[in-house]
Image (cartoon, rainbow, N blue to C red; front, side, top):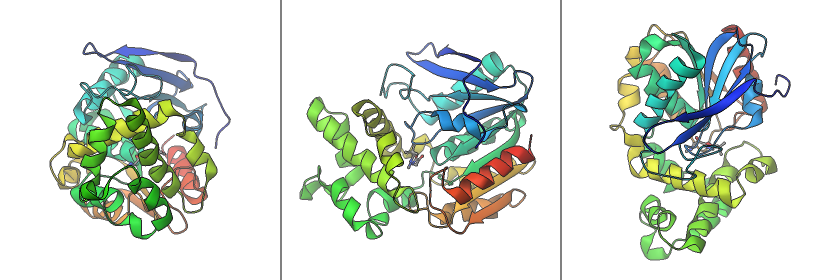
Length: 310
Ligand code: STX
């Protein structure tokens, strides 16, 4: 990765409907405009995300999506949908980046948001780099939160099932929703940790303790679990299959799709479907990687992608 850097500017976007969205600008103020979209939803940005772009060539905006990271109110689900985030991106582009077009970079949920933004604001996207493709279809949610990845990680699955009694296990996303939005703080926290640990333990090809520690604090787990679960209860606030159906809108945008073959969180079948629906984009299926952006084979491809467009 590029060296660890500090932002040269940071601030908050007041959404006027109850949120203060934290943003920061990194790299070269005269560089190529780019926006980084983190995962989850609810994951927040980390300092390593700044290091995916050559700081001499890029002017990168990173922001914590509504309710997570340094944005406030923390873990809030009010006025928090995909389309609110797309609207925030438009304001960040014009008011903070002050650019007509920007490179859009997103992994996992960040790829979902990148595709949603690019399909709505096609003319504002100079290039698109997406990794670990996720489109919030029913089959993708079922695979990870109900029955699928459970067969690869039976040990970690027990921890995910633990807070939910037998009679509610036929619909785990709904069972988690009741606990994550209930009034009992202890129940909320227990559910938040179980939900978050399931994801952190299963995202890399090989066990990676750092991934588990990243989201282990009460504060981070609560935002991550509440926001993810809220978005998935509503299928990402999109129609079933919408992002693949409308992928043809991307045909004129230079694009790169990067996917780990052993991604258990967002399996390669979705990236493959995107590749078929958007054949003009470069497609890289990395043979020895899972889901996380810092898996060696994925990281090398991501850096090559930002360098190629710089
Ligand atoms: N969630 C996919 C996603 O965006 C279904 C994601 N998975 N893990 C992460 O994000 C973190 C790296 C933020 C934990």
